[in-house]
Amino acid sequence: MIKGKGNGHGGEGGHDGAGMMRWLLTYADLITLLMVFFTVMYSMSRVDAEKFKTLAGSLRASFFAGGSQASTGSGFMPGGPGGSGSGGDVLEDLGYELAAATEGLTSQGSVSIYYGDRGLTISLGAVLFRPGEAELLPDAKTILDKVSPYIAKVPNYVSVEGYTDNLPISTRDFPSNWELSARRATNVIHYFVNTSKVPASRFFVVGYGEYRPVVPNNNERNRAMNRRVDIVILKAAPVNDQGRLIESPK
Image (cartoon, rainbow, N blue to C red; front, side, top):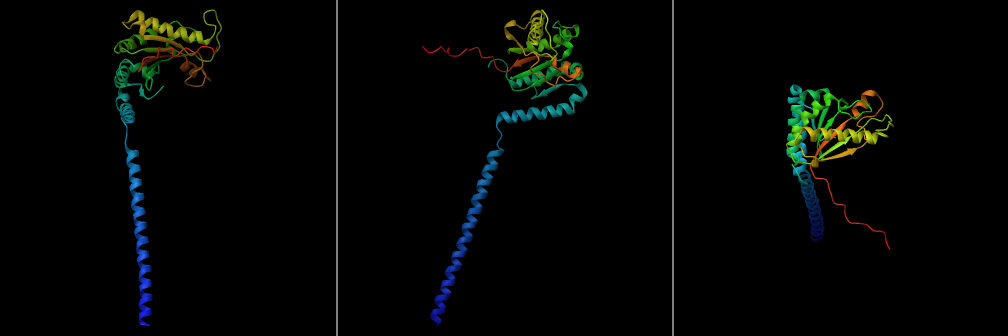
């Protein structure tokens, strides 16, 4: 009987050993899961240089808006509405310089300055032209005179892009808003080339007509905002390669 009890006790002891092993396996699984969790968290926390630069620009813009903009009226907005030539950092710094130089104009909404993927965009509002016309107003020339020295500071290509509101036009000079928007952009380029040292070869014209409004054309104030010219100092040179010629199969 004693021997039988001993065997029974031995059996129970083996069962306890298996229970301890199960606890060890559970503990090992937990440690493995924690290791995987922290590895994933570490990889997610790594910030590449481009994202860090974007974050730094946004933070600088926030401080600028909270401090300097309150006193200077700067209208520079990194990341708003991008090769050869000067890189992104140079263009961003140029944007801050231009915002300070056009302080009164940015506070009035005549000039808005954005920095984004394409480059530095200087958006000039309806003060440049009368509705349905493409001739530069006297105030427009004052604004362009302030902008042109900053374009001359860098060697980058410049896209001058004209826009209109959605009011239809059909005249001898402007059969549609496409012609009107392209003429507006062209007249801005002519003024730069004739009055500054920026070579004509750096510019090209884009006319978007009424098809890229920044706000809905549902009132006169919004239509005035859509009658604009954007001067985009590009980060990268435009591609001039036509690619491979595709011929019809014989």
